[in-house]
Image 1 (cartoon, protein in one colour):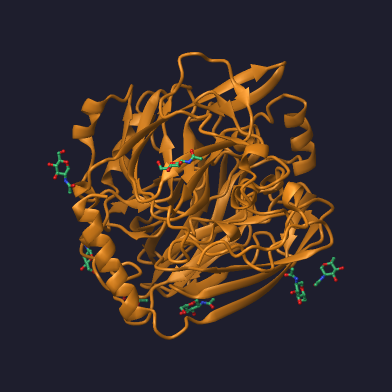
Image 2 (cartoon, helix red, strand yellow):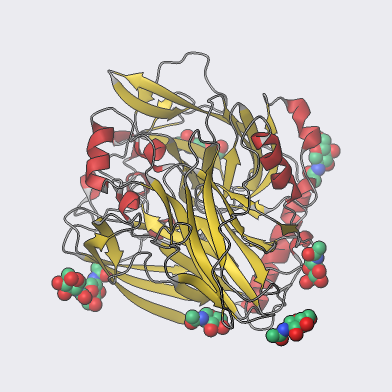
Length: 553
Ligand SMILES: *[C@@H]1O[C@H](CO)[C@@H](O)[C@H](O)[C@H]1NC(C)=O
Ligand SMILES: *[C@@H]1O[C@H](CO)[C@@H](O)[C@H](O)[C@H]1NC(C)=O
Ligand SMILES: *[C@@H]1O[C@H](CO)[C@@H](O)[C@H](O)[C@H]1NC(C)=O
Ligand SMILES: *[C@@H]1O[C@H](CO)[C@@H](O)[C@H](O)[C@H]1NC(C)=O
Ligand SMILES: *[C@@H]1O[C@H](CO)[C@@H](O)[C@H](O)[C@H]1NC(C)=O
Ligand SMILES: *[C@@H]1O[C@H](CO)[C@@H](O)[C@H](O)[C@H]1NC(C)=O
Ligand SMILES: *[C@@H]1O[C@H](CO)[C@@H](O)[C@H](O)[C@H]1NC(C)=O
């Protein structure tokens, strides 16, 4: 560990000792997961509902709250939810991925307990089992700043969750059968916005009703299966204020590109002639543009929205340069606070020496006439025993082999299908390069962490590209996009012990193997670094029936 990160760590420990005195508040939820009919694109289909709703209930909480969610699985299949972007520090036990937890069997319940420690911002939860996300089961998780910590903008009149993304009219079982037979699920049928898809002249229920001259926060997340989306508000500009847990420099935009798995907050002020306007979402970087609209109404308004929709950004050769240039405009506000009183910029990530470079290349292959997706030649499959449990009980060698994925993409293209776990060294400061040699946009998400997205460029990465990195004010976030034949670089300190899923956020790709787990083990085996297996944890596979061991002290 460099002296600088040691310093940061010392400051952080001191801060913890000062702040973590009284126990943080608890919020309790009881969720019933069922099938039910939904019509996101106007055609009724079977969806996955939580307490009868799609999108599911919102978790509205404050930094450091303890969240307890008792989930009753009333589907006919095993089920898990993940809290994407919630770091679950020391607690990959509750991360809700098949590599860390046994799924909740049909007809049973399980209680998640986790803390939104030192985080603020906009996040989503969604199912990680099967292809459930194609049918719903997702919702928003908002984390507010604590009372005395300044927020770099005035409290908005309302804070509106918008979950949007591509959608298929086929349900998850049909889509899964297609993937299991070795084919692709193909192109989506449309775009849904909070479970609806409106058209010009028939936008459906208003998304918000705005009082003139008031300002509204829209928290927008792309919960789609594969496509990037551009969103915009007719007649209005949007001021970007937050992105996946960071307060950003507050630039103003006419439209925003948002890639699968990403979330951002924009402020919209009702400062135009009082009537209806359209909120527009349309697909990007895709041969056929799918568009949906929703109404934004003025409370005093009279009159329909104009049918002239604001134009999308360029879709020709300028599409990627336009989007990269927008990415570069996203900056961390160094003087603003996030979850802690100290300014975000007091974490000088650009001064820490890189201890390891991991370069990951995505690929798409047909193996034995079946479509698979891989990372550095390894296509992941979930074993029956969660990887974390096998590792904890010292039985890893019966379930998986470490480091099938090397730090460099292999020359040899023969893909291996196997559980994929990569060993990381606790507290290393690493650079991960995502290299995309395919001609479609990719998005990558890492659980348990946020990372600094320091660069995205077209072409090939080489060490000389480091001179182009933003080492001052890159946004700390949890999902990064990579354009066709391009690369993206992120940096982070591996200081959260656990087993963490690194995945393509495109569900077809993740389901067919484009994911791995990063195992970060603290050599001290200390409770300071990682919690013990929770006493209530269900055990399955080869660890079923084992005594619950408290290994860390
Ligand atoms: C980073 O590496 C350089 C060159 O090896 C060294 O001089 C410097 O002290 C290191 N910085 C830190 C913070 O460890
Ligand atoms: C959950 O929903 C199912 C189906 O609607 C219902 O039978 C069951 O009683 C509900 N369970 C709870 C705990 O609400
Ligand atoms: C969400 O939490 C914030 C902060 O505690 C509070 O101001 C707001 O009223 C809550 N919203 C809802 C819908 O409960
Ligand atoms: C299942 O729900 C019951 C009733 O709320 C609760 O007492 C029990 O602890 C839950 N079981 C698990 C494993 O979470
Ligand atoms: C950054 O945050 C500070 C502190 O809250 C605020 O005063 C400033 O306006 C913000 N700067 C930008 C460029 O958004
Ligand atoms: C909104 O603000 C504008 C300019 O500040 C002002 O002219 C107008 O009267 C305000 N409208 C309402 C309804 O308050
Ligand atoms: C993982 O890496 C650490 C630190 O480099 C090393 O001590 C450990 O033996 C490795 N574990 C495995 C299973 O390879």
